[in-house]
Image (cartoon, rainbow, N blue to C red; front, side, top):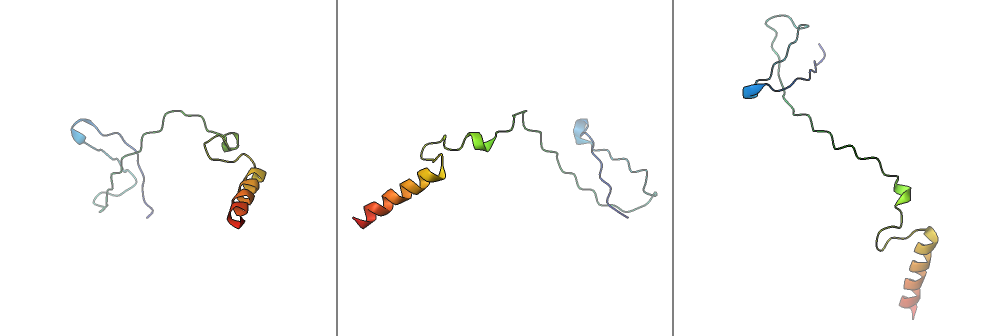
Length: 78
């Protein structure tokens, strides 16, 4: 028999009620109560491509990264 998943609301006094009409009377079952995470407030998704390079110390293009690395290597060699 496959697992049965039900969603319910906790009633006053912490009462959790699950109805499983598909199961015959006297069937032994394990019950796991797992709180459902509250949905995060409606925050629109962010296109990561729009924020590339906007933080301190970040590079906007691969060319900027190459130039920075080249300058570091030049410092080491001198």
